[in-house]
Length: 122
Image 1: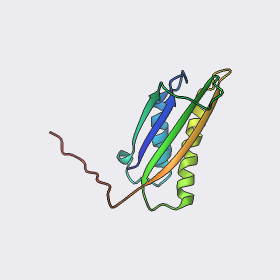
Image 2: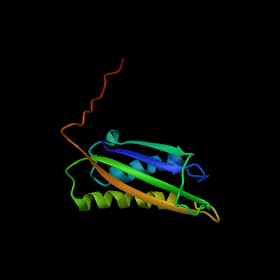
Image 3: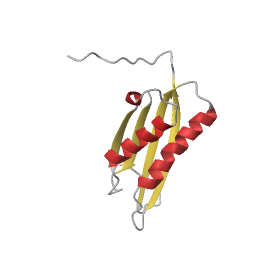
Image 4: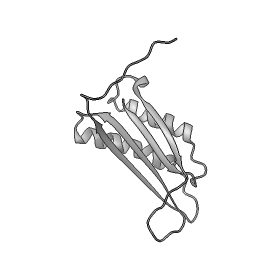
């Protein structure tokens, strides 16, 4: 915890995925809401089969979902969402003639059913 999933349309050529994940982890850790940097788990998923609206045209999107253990205030969650949005605004390509959408959501995870453990090395 937390888990960050970044979904993006593959037509956003030039999105520096690895660097973006690192920048997102840094922004989240610097918020003070994450106790240990090794608690941050992020991943990116490039999407090939997408549809935006019905009109067609050149479109792309980047969507980040941050999953956290429940218990933070709405203000804290909003601040985390904005930290993510700042990083994505700075790093998301804006190809000429393409409408690009950016979105961020913060989702509470149930503390009672969440299981996490660090497995010993073999």
